[in-house]
Image 1 (cartoon, rainbow, N blue to C red):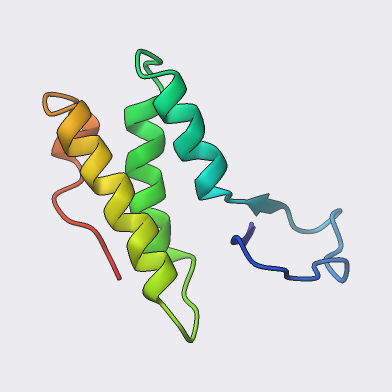
Image 2: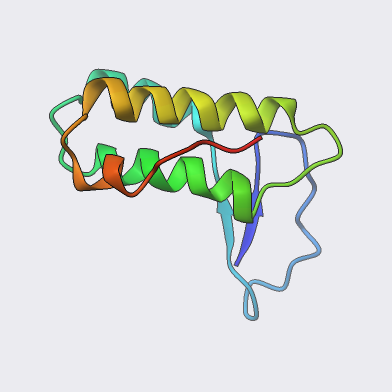
Amino acid sequence: MLWAWERPDDLRFVDVRKAGVAFLAATIFFDWANAHMDDPFVPRALHRLVVVVRYGCRTNNPDPNGQISKTAFDLLNNRYPKSEWTAKTPCWFK
């Protein structure tokens, strides 16, 4: 699985028969999370958004990634403090 972050990457070289491409659009997700606060999948998605910065979205300039990770972490902790996904997300990553 290849991850495309919120930047203008040209991924046409990827052979989709051999690899999948996931586009992680954090701003789109944050809009969804704010509009659907009762959606039971939001805490899990916030957890994954925090973790993907650590494991899959490294760039030469990590500041935008760190900000996305911190925003997801803060939303998760402030809005869903008793969620199992909050417990599984003890920190955010730069």
